[in-house]
Image 1 (cartoon, rainbow, N blue to C red):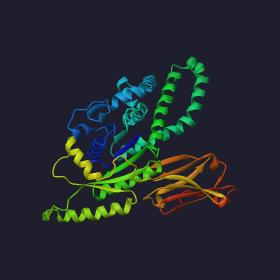
Image 2 (cartoon, rainbow, N blue to C red):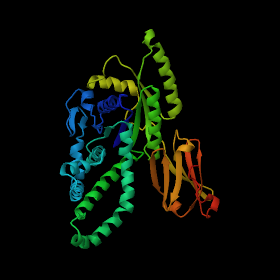
Image 3 (cartoon, one colour):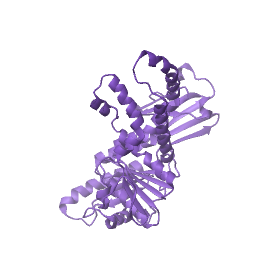
Image 4 (tube, rainbow, N blue to C red):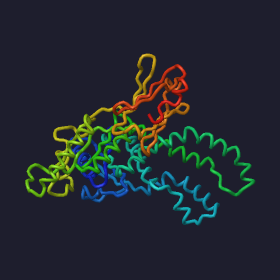
Length: 401
């Protein structure tokens, strides 16, 4: 099965490109499902058809759904939410306020991702096209499974044992609600679902992200940041789609300056992202709505290419042996040294880029070794591990280098 995720700054035509890709794949005989995880759904508008929260066939080989985030929230969070509400009520919080406070902002969007695993496991489709939320929300969605994985593996087992041990005593001393096995089981179930999604979306033979941009300075800057953060968390970008390019046949003097500006920005996109393939789509003279026009849009974007193919193979994270040392290489395009912070703690390597932090669980081979040095070369973070203990001067090698 193939999974394609489309994201980009709001208003760039992300949904249209995603829908066009799905229509093209279905026409080629691929059983295709397109789903929207964007809270501000526009997928139904793109197809000009009513869509529901569950997959429905809209043409031959093509299914679509607009996920009901509230429904997914209740399915995944209800047991945990009830405990949180009871705790807040015990603490004196009003019932209505407790209901509102029990839902973390953005949580409903996160649970939308669980549909990815459900549809993959079903085996009903050859291609899953995901119309993601705008870039900031997408990054939060995609990074959560790994963050939660860290909590589940390290804190959760200890917390569960402690609560199980002291519950009888606390029950005698206080009326405070205490989490029981049902709550812990709900947390574990949620973790399994999200961790399963993470494994699917970081599988280089299955999943790719495609960035949609317009030839505009702010949009390109946002896409560069998104590309960096996707690389940080191990998600692979196999194409950049530049949408709404004013075509050559438009010769009205009014658009002359705009065409020059767009040409400059298009050059910037190529310089920034190549060798990642740069796909383009012209600015059409109408809204590309409905199956017929979306098929035309798909032809415009992909030409003779297979829209479902892996268009570029990248390896954001890899480990290589060099002599007696091992090198951990993490590709971080568009990063400056001043924005990068690296340090090791026990069997984890912490990498912070701007406001995003990833803790990498080191493979067994590296856990037994010491960090010898860390450098930033071109667009790669290179961390060298060796057997000898580092000198005092190298003990914190990597932080801020």
